Image (cartoon, rainbow, N blue to C red; front, side):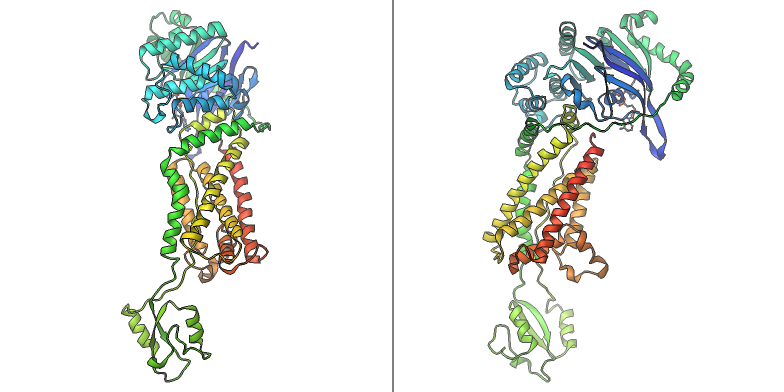
Amino acid sequence: MFNNCIKIQNVFKSYQQKLNKKENVLNGISLNVERGQIYALAGSSGCGKTTLLNCLMGMYEIDSGEIEIFNQQIEFKQISKLSNIIGFMPQQTSLVDNLTIMETLQYFANLQLMDQKNFIERFKIISDLLELPAKNSFIKKLSGGEQRRVSLAVTIIHNPQLLILDEPTVGLDFKLRNKIWNYFEKQTTENKLTILVTTHCMNEVKKSHRCGFMRDGILIEDDKPLKIMEKYETQSFDEAFYQMCLNENENREIKKLENCDKVKNYKIKESSTRKVRKQIIKALLVKEFHRFKRAYTEIYMVFIYSIFSILIYNSTFGKIPKDLKLGIVNYEIENYNCDTLPQNNSNQCENKMFLCGFFNHTEDFKAIFYKSYEDANQDLHDFKIINSITITSGVSILAILQSRMDGVWNRSLLNGVSITEILIANFIQYTFYSLIISIELILLLIYIVKVEIVGRIWLAFLLIFGYSIDGFLFGLNCSIIFKDFISGHYSNIAVISHITLLSGIIWPTEGFSKWLKPLEYILPLAFPLNAQHGVTLKGYGITHPKVASGFAVIIFHMIFLSILLYFNLKRKLFY
Ligand SMILES: Nc1ncnc2c1ncn2[C@@H]1O[C@H](COP(=O)(O)OP(=O)(O)OP(=O)(O)O)[C@@H](O)[C@H]1O
């Protein structure tokens, strides 16, 4: 068995600051945590404790140095291989608001592939230890302290050998803190549990086996609590820490320079390929199901918004205008008398006049004849007639902005979920949504809007299904690229409205400026909508160039957006 659970050697870490000026947040940190020990890491706020733990978990990339857990070198984004023996509690609670306590713990237990019997037993023990509220309570209805207890419960549910805890007892009362620390002490003695914990509570530091004090990214003291007390000849850790800071100020310059010389290049290893596990995909889907069934706005946006938008499009742009007054000046017959000219639907229209052909296609206009262009123009300016044109109705694009800001994403990854598993779960989820939406839309078009689909219904259905999947893939990419919900959401809306305008939904692409025309070939909706039009109104089959090119564009975007999603996920795995 390993004696050194955690080995951190000369670790440097900086964040990219404004104007590309880098400042070290970790300045050559080295520390060891032995098996069966509680190591308490204390220090002033902003000194780099959380950064160190996040580097340890592989969430942040270090600039130089080495980190080993259980004798395995930890690389950036690589912790998942040890996830079943590590329990990490981040500083934020990182839970799904819409789940209950039971559903939350079940989700993380499933990610750890725990069997149900074991889970129920552990749930009972942990519930009693942490005095958790009723198991059916929703996370969003818990107090801050209760949420932290659930977060700690998630961390220890799978009975890991190593706990890495970022201020786990903040907001808890004295009695509960003691209870938890007694549990930690018992576990370290009886089961050789190892704990690295950050804290601001000096009472907790006192109880640890070994402690470290950090200041400005430097570990200024690292020893047993008693030894530190003796060294600084005090009974108070606050006093000892104050003394440490004074001493450290004198040595600071020399220490930084020494360490800077030792900076070496650090290489990220490519992640190893791993088998996709069905249980993990099931766990991700079940969690999403519980979350989604209570997210009413999201249900509306996914399943109902599309129906409304189709109905609105159909009742506004999509309607063939009725009884509109259309001014006509006809120079086909010289010196004509307006009263004797054929009117709409009249049988008089048997000759070869263009006007007759026009009437055959525009029976919903009420024709008003003028002798001259000037007369018509005068009435046009007086708003007596309306210039109007029929606009084909289009299907709105749907995209989902998946909220990733609750921290559960990071936590799931740290519990061993792989990118491929995330992608498969998302693909299943959004294919299902697209299927429902496509069925809804096709039924709506046929039975409510009463569009007569001249071509094959399954072709029309496949087209809707295809571009709604593209829409979801686009939304997922947005949700990875943007850091916060507001910028992601607005960018999503902006792109969708531009695509809608440029794809011929509002106005036929034939009427666009010349320089806009080429966009038709690259936009995801122009060709598919043309294909949809061809199938629905003209009965084109799959081999018709319009329909085939519509499908080609859909498939191209599906592949392109999936590849983009994969690389976006690889690049921005942690948030
Ligand atoms: N993602 C980030 N980008 C840029 N700077 C960051 C980032 N995260 C942290 N920092 C900065 O790094 C420094 C160390 O932050 P860190 O959260 O590690 O401190 P800490 O010791 O955990 O503080 P506390 O005890 O208050 O939680 C701070 O100055 C902080 O502003």
